[in-house]
Length: 312
Image (cartoon, rainbow, N blue to C red; front, side, top):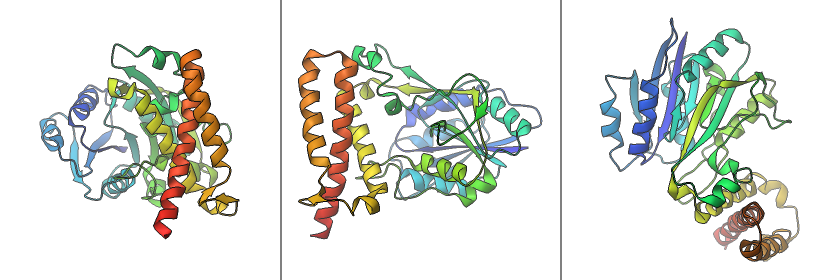
């Protein structure tokens, strides 16, 4: 069996070093041929120097994708991959020593499956901001926290049992047929998400089988710069923009005020008032919930405003 581990990276050299350290410490199953592809998505820091440090420790290949954007980098990895399966992770995680073994055992045990995914636990840089710790269940998606239970079970879109981008795998043949949308994913002057969720959803909805693998574990490293109101707001603004873009054709038939879907206006005002008021009088999970809702609608508002301005 042959496997490709793929990482797309942009200007996170030291974070990438931590990830590569963990990959170098993995247990590698017997009889496995594997490679590590690192796609440098036009970084301007010392990413290439860090990659070179691991040439003798990991079976890595460095690829370069000049078109910035997460989906562009993922598609470059697909074009370069030689493995029968592609395991995706990120440049800000620490993989468990048994991570690769858990996937390979699953590929061998359930060869009729196409998509696989595992747990993502947070690793907060201390000291952890108190309101972040108190509100983790509200903002778990902002930190890519994913836990669908301790038992192997089928993936399901309907039951929201799908993996996240920092820890999933797709059989290479299907991955080449289901590529990543360049209009989704982070890119310069654009904050959109869900490039991997869109692919995984399409695969599962097409009838492909998937497996949740609780033993395939990674930790997502959450620095202090992400334990802030600004980060949480920006993240959910991005999801508001993402969903507005994705649903634009349907929304275009709805009533508009001044180029913005009418339903967004009252939501924006109400959620902002509730956030500003509750920030001073309510427990953290309450005001963080309102911050999340306000930011989401702000992102949707921004998308439609930009679309309006582009037409004028």
